[in-house]
Length: 356
Ligand SMILES: NC(=O)c1ccc[n+]([C@@H]2O[C@H](COP(=O)([O-])OP(=O)(O)OC[C@H]3O[C@@H](n4cnc5c(N)ncnc54)[C@H](O)[C@@H]3O)[C@@H](O)[C@H]2O)c1
Ligand SMILES: O=C(O)C[C@H](O)C(=O)O
Image (cartoon, rainbow, N blue to C red; front, side, top):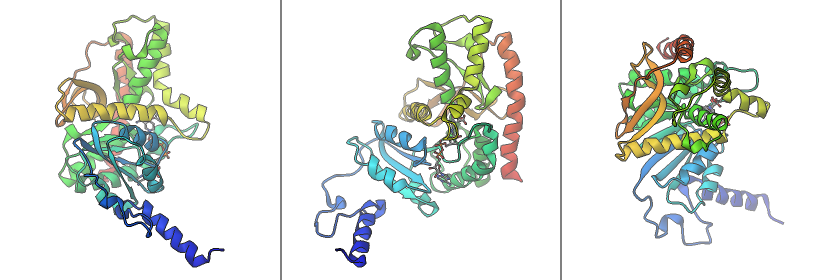
């Protein structure tokens, strides 16, 4: 029978084993991971995920650990990061994984990072809009972006936390206030809208979704999500009925998942897939690939609004070029007016949250 003291010692040894900054073998072993022959991280990019223990964060962390462009992967959350880190660090892929728990470890999580991906924050339940998340998520994004401004001001930021139409302006204001704002380095992730649009359009056309590319512009909520079906690749025509079905389904894709999950959260797996697709595009741009073009919600002058999602070219500095909207048909022009009206209010709400 073990005494309480022995049991406590054993728990302490296990905790020490799991702690990322004090990684040790049991006392009986003379070999420690720090003394192993490993030379540590190889060439590649350093990526931090903030909110790594969440519904998106966990599969996103797993997929980033599998990405050959990543040499160091920092997982940060306010709960359960060490469990996720211990689990993912056993995968026999190249990236070195480290876990960070709580605000006091944010500095170590962020220092030296090339790319920071943020899926931290609460998700929707049925009946809620993305804007209903503002009160909680605005504060979370503000705190995390203050950390980025301090500890890795040159990093590219991929912001996933909703409402994206407001959290991106919040991040921009935090960076502006701290004197570190580089609009090319802040990107709201709208890739899931493109992923859904490609899938639903492929279903209608009865072709492989991997062959489809639908530009989705505007923002990331309801009518602000505007798929440009007139610019689909491969060039395709749609009946009025198909156009209305596709536009509505793409705009409501998030709600479709929220309702199907019936209170257990929103899209996590397809979002992790989309986030990795987008992060990989950013890393390819950083590594000098000049041909990477994706849609993202960025600081922009293509409309009268200060932020707008369009196709952008990614490069060594983040957003290197913002493409114009291109020719829109009458249906899309009407959609654009509705999108801009809602977007203007959401952007203003985000800006006011920091300037108040
Ligand atoms: N942009 C998009 O297309 C898109 C798609 C899906 C979900 N989302 C949004 O992503 C967010 C996360 O969704 P989820 O399903 O992963 O939620 P979740 O609740 O499963 O996970 C969120 C994680 O964030 C962590 N967190 C909370 N406060 C934090 C802080 N201050 N610092 C670090 N981590 C913190 C939580 O501990 C949790 O692990 C939601 O706001 C959701 O609406 C966006
Ligand atoms: O719909 C949500 O609340 C989550 C996300 O924005 C999505 O589009 O799936």
